[in-house]
Image 1 (tube, rainbow, N blue to C red):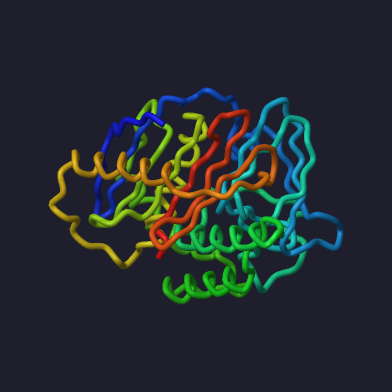
Image 2 (cartoon, helix red, strand yellow):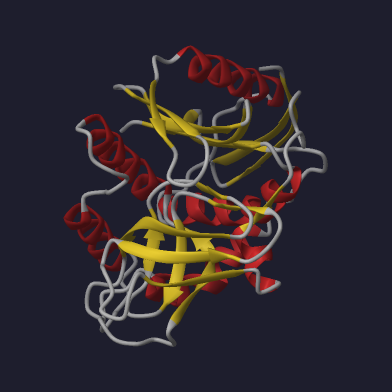
Length: 301
């Protein structure tokens, strides 16, 4: 995979490196938020009784629709997060695996879900990825450890000093939205990019790469807010590192990810996943029709 780092932006020790790859915009698909705005997507409980770790999604459009791992969906009987990235085929009905991020509610919150402007914090995405990989290797499906997700939600509420009657991750967003948004405004999207790598000081935190620049534009602010959420209260002055060094580290990380030993699994929608997990890196690639749809990688610890 050929890649070129385009921009380096830093604030309070967080550095975002944006880049593009040679296969940018070679597959046409739509992000969840845009599809929901145009009423192409309906997310609802799997049935009238509901199931904590499953939801039903209808794609009524003629396009492929993408949902990212860690996407937060709000409403119905309780708020959830998507367990893995999913590419939904046109005119399709699918059951997808999710995790609950609102332990104290099981009641009708409007009958259906709507996507949030946030994704889960990066450590929650990373831990969930590890759980899903473990389940898939055991011959199971894309389920995560629900108790570990609930523990992570409780830690977030406690660390952020947020009260929540239903132990809801969304209450952190409501309480801290102004703070998160002001911080996120320090980072701006670079045109014609489809990937972002994030560092804290000089340490690699995570990387997301999409085929589509349109999908990247939707997820850029969500990913930025996710890392701000993760590191709130842990700010420090960044290392005296030159832009060229961060660009080099990003391209080096892409090479490391490419060389990781991977296990292949059927995707949650269409396509195939290639998953990897060791002491240094954890993540996955979602491929379809010989195209990379989404790559997510995280520092393992």
